[in-house]
Image (cartoon, rainbow over all chains, first blue to last red; front, top):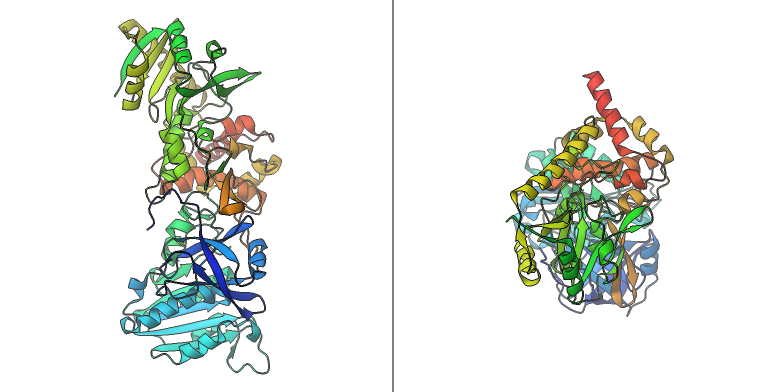
Amino acid sequence: MTTATVDLYKPVKATLTKVIDESPSIKTFVLEPEVEFSFKTGQFIQLSLEGIGEAPFTPSSSPLVKDRIEVTIMKAGFVTEKIHNLKEGAVLGIRGPYGRGYPLEKLYGKEVLVLGGGCGFAPIRSLLYNLEAEKDKIKKLTFCYGSKTPKDCIYKGYIDHLRSVDKFEVYRSVDQADDEWNETEGVVTCLLDEISINVEESAAVVVGPPIMMKFGVQKLLDIGYPEHKIFLSMEKNMSCAVGKCGHCMMGKYFVCKDGPVFSYDEIKDQPDIWK
Amino acid sequence: METYYTLLKSNWDTLLNSILNEYDIYAPFHFGESIEYSIVTESNVKNIIYNRPKPSTPLKTFFLPVKENVVNPSKSDKKRIVMGAPSCDLSALSILDEIYLDKDYIDPNYSGHRKNTLLIGFDCHSTLEHCHCTTYGFKPYPEENTDIVISYIEDKIVLNVKTEAGETFRKNWINSYERITEKELTKLNDIQTDVEKELNGKNADLPDYQQTGKLITASEEDIWQRYSDTCVSCGACSAICPTCSCFLFIERPQFEKVRSIDTCQYPGFERVAAGEDPLRPLSKRFRNRYMCKYVWKPEKFESKACTGCGRCIEACIGDINKNDLFRELNKKETVET
């Protein structure tokens, strides 16, 4: 973990080198930090616009790539709207990485189930890059991904790639299909009825909107996953990112420092985990 | 370390005057009805208020100013003495230290202010209506987080030197002192015991810290709705709380950040971009602050998150008295069990 520095709150500069449209409301921003910037999958960064604002994001790129960092952002508020308006060449600030990422060591040797929804695919992609590079360490990976409509599905090219990776299985659903959609229609949890997985040998990762995580966890518990083998990446209002400002408190936890990834048994008794 | 010295008040005033060039010294003074910290000058040194509870502003503001640039802080090399903090405020530094001096992420500003400040706490020789430090296990005389403790008794200043920094200060600056006499020590102890008794007496029906946490956890929603009915979300309870330490960042050019005090009592404190805002309902927001102080912080930290200063009761423009709320919960539980 990062140790104390006089620059605890000062970002390093990063140049925006590419903007990729992922869906009508989601874009990926490729950033080149002025210094090498490494992170562990599931850790988050603080991305700042000079003089405007700062917001937390979990990188969507591979943690094994050190010279650039990709952040996939849905237009959802003041800062994200400003970021969406940026053009290549813009200079942003990044701080971090912060927090506790995905517990890779608890996924090794397992049939890994990843359940994602909407923009939750962004942090998941980083995990999938990581697991693909280490696929000899896992038994298999089953990825269930849900979006509202086909046009809201992000990383279409990457999905095609994942389907070709040995040991990887991909299932997708949309809440509302169109004529061209030939995969599942329904909320993402219905994909759990389609998959074949040995729950005893499995650990699950769930990332997405709170309502999706709530029902996703419920279904995983119903099909026999123990609470300590379900890992969630929590979305809270991380601001300082170093366990001080209090905005991301979730009961006794500072989500920024104690999380953002928690096992379900760690957080189930804390307040407002699905809000 | 605990060593008592005494010196004449007139000599103490002379001493303070003689070190004004070395230190910025802050001490409590009367401002109308209230007591407030202000900078000590040659002309006001005689007006310092000793051993009276308590400055309206908590001690924390010396370490967590209301607004401060944390990326490009303004620097002053002049050392600082803060005199006059009561025990409740000094004990409150423990949890602030746990948060801001957390070894994983030491906050440079807070740490700098702490290191640059010599603390001279005051015993409380009287109490205010809402003082309840003893209910939560604290004494009305400073026991921790202070370099020196002062009691002004008759014409003498009694110094209780508690740290090496305090002893260095004494050696450097205090030449004409005497060892405390047995009679003086007895007098000091008598004052301390009397104040403690008074506090214990008037707060006898108030549940202790741990019990308060249990009562809050078990409480029903209706009592929070009732007590928050007059809350206008002004945030005064947090601003004047010696342990509340939440803040927000204001972005400035050159990627600088200004830290500004913030509170869960303001709407939108936990709101995320997609719109979820767990603390939107007022009664929930109101309860959140007490859950934080009596339930969640105790699970996470060693130090207590309320030291019983009572300022939140004094400051509330909605006349909300959290101790009435806790008494009511306590009474209800006693009746039910």
